Length: 549
Image (tube, rainbow, N blue to C red; front, side, top):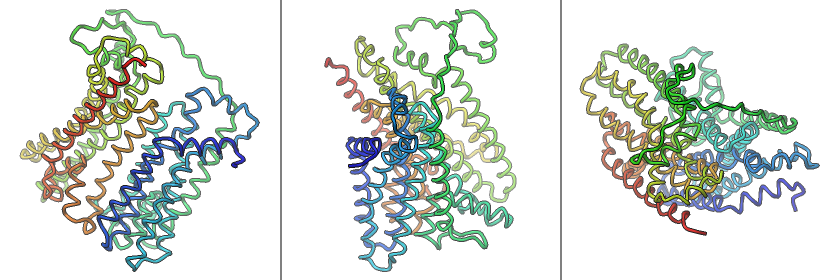
C-alpha cells in the first residue's frame, strides 16, 4: 500500500482511464510497426530510439500539464491544501501520478530496444544511455508541465503553454546547429559556437540524435565541447530539480484571494466611446439579433468565448501581420544577398515561409477547436443547447466554423511574407496558389480533429491534449525530411510525407527534395477525406449526446 494518499489516488486514476489504455496501445502498436518495417536494417536502433523519444515528448504534456489545474477546476484544491499533508507530500503525489504513466510507456518500450541485441553490433552501454535519455526526457518535460499546472487555473491553457515549451525545447534551441539553417554554428565565432552548443544541449531530441547518429551532420559539436547527450544529462537533472523546487514553493504558498472582476456595462449600439475608437470593434456593445441565415451556434461562440472576441482576434491578426513583415524583410535581404542563385533561393524561401504558416496553424488550431463541445459540457451550457430545435449538423458546423474563421484570418495576415517573393520571381504565382490550398486544407483538418475530440471527451483539457498529440505528432513527421536521408526506403518516406502538411507545403513551394514524391494531390485527397470522415463521426456523436437520457 502506498503511504502517500495523493500518490495512491493519482497513480490509480491515471492508469485506470480509457485515455491511458488508448495511449499505451498506440505507443506499442507504433513501436511494433517500426520493428516490423525496418527489421533487420542497421538503422533500426535510431528509428526506435527517436520514435520513442518523440512519442514520450508528445504524450508528456497531456498527462502532466493538467494534474493540478483539474483540482482547481473541480473546486477541490482548497480542500486538498486544508488536509494535514505537507506541501511536499502533495507535490510528490502529483508528480508520481503524472509521471507514473509516462514511466510505464518508457519501460514498455524497452523490449523493442533490447531486440537490437539480436542484430548484433549494439553495445549494452548504448542501450543504457538511450534509456537514460528517455527517462530524463519524461521527468524533464513532466516537471515543466507540473510547474505550468501549478501557476495556471485552466487545464486547457496549461496544456497549450506546455506544448509550446516542449516544441521550443525540442526543436527551436537545436535548430541553429542543424545544417538546414545554413551551417549557422559552423560560421559563428568560437564563443558563440559554445553558446549554441550549450543551448542545443537543452533539447532531448538533440541528445538522442548524438547517441544514435553520432556521425551525422546534425550532431557535430562545437570545438572543445563534449557530445550533446553528455551535456544534456546534467543540464536536464538541474532543470528537473529547479522546476521541482519552484513547484514546491508555489504549493507552499497560502491561497491568494481571487480578485473580483469589475462589472462591465453594456454599451448601446451607435454610441461612440474611447474603447470603440481604440479597438475598432467593441465586444461590449449590445449586439443585433441573430438573423435567419446566421448559424446561432457560430454567433454564440464569437460572442461568448474570450479567444474569439473581436479585440483579441484583431490583436492576434496584427501580431501575425507584424511577424509577416519581419519575415518579408528577412526574405528580401536573403534574396538580395544571393542574387546569383535567385531562382533556387526564392523557392527555398517560399518553402520555409509556407512551412512556418502551416506550423502556426498546427500550434494555434488545437487551442481554438479543442474546447468546442467539451467546454459547454463542463459549464452546463450543453444541457440548454440540446433542448433547442437546432439539428446536430448545424451545431457541428457552427463549432467547426468558429475555429476555421480565426485560423483563416491568421493565415491571411501572414501571406504577405509569401507575396513579396513574387517581386523577385513572378513564376512563383502557381506555387503560391498551391501553398494556399495546402494551408486551407490544414486549417480544415486541424479544426475537424479538434471538434471531433471535443465531442468524444467530456473535459476540455483532455480534448485539447488529444488534439495537440495528433496534430503535433503529425507535424513532427516533417523531421523525417532532413533526418531520414538514407534511413527510410522511398515508399515509406512517401507514405509518411503524404500525410504531413509541412512536407506537402514544401512540395507545393517547389522544393526539389519534396517534389520528387509528388505529394500535393494525394495529400489534399487524404486530408479532405479525413476531414469529411471526422465531421461525419462528430455529427453522429452529437446526435447521440442530444438524445434524451
